[in-house]
Image (tube, rainbow, N blue to C red):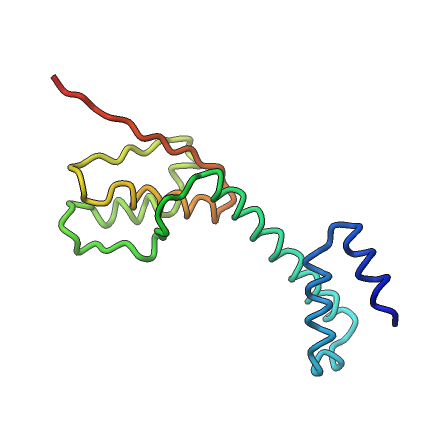
Length: 140
């Protein structure tokens, strides 16, 4: 089989993940034992993975994630008064689907921005758009 025209066609169709998967399959000697359906499944998995990754990267860029924070790295032992049950409930993202907002308040330096980035990162992984606003509160 001539691969060059196949790669050209995959590129023209915008199936870059499948092209990458095909290259990987050609380099793998064990791939010859796969059925046609298995080959197609592997190529589709590559395409879906690449598209999801690109969507995540676009959403993360738009969300302006300033910190490499993820929900799994939250340290509940830190003395910031963070309610573990409440934060884990927020981590599910149900509040987003319920069209609610989250406001994180507290003294300077306790990690509010980091926690917000962790929640934004989670929302981006769930293929949701994110808006992050920093405000100041002046109490007189």
